Amino acid sequence: MALVLLFPLGAVAPAPPVIFDPAQPPAGAPELEEGSTIVPRRKSYRKAHWWSIKARRVDLSSGERYASNDWLTNFLSMPRSHVLERIGSHLWGQIAICTAVVVLDKAGFHFPRKSSLPHQLLGGVLALLLAFRTNMAYSRFWLAREKWGISSSSCRDLALYVVAHVRPRSPELAAQLVALIAAFPLALAHRCSGDTSAKLPPGVAAIPRIRSPEYTLAGPDFTGATTPPAALAICLELRFVLAEVARRNARRLPEVEAQVEAEMLMQASRRVGNLVDALGSCESLLTTPVPLSYSRHTSRFLTIWCATLPVVLVDTLGFITIPAVAFIGWCLFGIEEIGHLIEQPFRDEQELGTAPALVSRRRFFSYGLPVRRLGRLASEQVHAIAATAPPAPQKRRPWWRLSL
Image 1 (cartoon, helix red, strand yellow):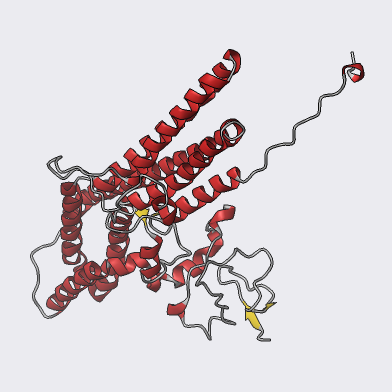
Image 2 (cartoon, rainbow, N blue to C red; image 1 turned 90 degrees about the horizontal axis):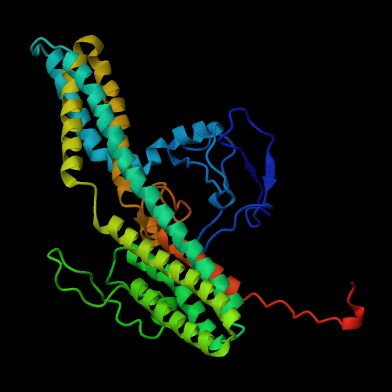
């Protein structure tokens, strides 16, 4: 049995060593997904390469988040940052410009009299521009999460209605409704992935009248519309089946009970409307970016500001200008890149699995919503509700045993 000593990298003071068997995860540890492995941590920092240290994984399902004592692992894992990798070319370009300015200055080529006033005046404007750009991107990310939350809660509410009100009278219609409700989150995730040429999930393709997956929306000139998305077709099928439930209730139930069921059916119909609204909002987020001219102007402004910054700093800092400009560029370019990453809030697990650096299958919320995972969870919840057994009917007590 291999024994490994674990050391909590996120703590400032060392903790007592814990004996751990890699073949058996500790109690309370989150369940690993298929293909994941447990990598034991090194004994100490001396034997672990600083560039191979990964940031601590948090259990998002239990509400765990990063804390202040994670500062050390977050700092040491900086070379593996996905944001740093994406801004690498831009950052190296600025470092090259800064190095050229410093070398020319030391070689005797003195630039014209330099003043930091333009950079001071434009620095506040640049900060507001970046903050507003990132805030716009985050608002899109949060709107996508809200719509997915509405979609999941509506599916659960519809499943509860089917189990409690439809299945006791029409088991065959209840089975159709459960299959459609469980398929909607999968179809919505397929639409949010943006790959219309990919095959539909098995739970969606198995539904009758959900035809070819090669569907497209209207083109840029609003022409050429073909088969509607699978998620919209599922909503249409839900309307048809609910209409059949209403017709059967009107024929079979007494008037008072039919009125109660009609009210519950109306609420279920509103939930289907919520699904259609969530689909429309997700499609808008997928196909409508932040105005491109806004993104281009922010990038140009930031590039010019950082490229001319060495001319202002070289007299005062000398060769220290190079690391100073590199640090300033990393901060500003990273903020801009985070806005680009979360502007399109939908991410596919397959894309996350092939992404480099820290982005992996376990880091679903690194820079987007794991739509396929959210869809699978919502679908499994619907099936779990449908598998609930109905309560046993209570026997009526004889009239002579009823208490007055």
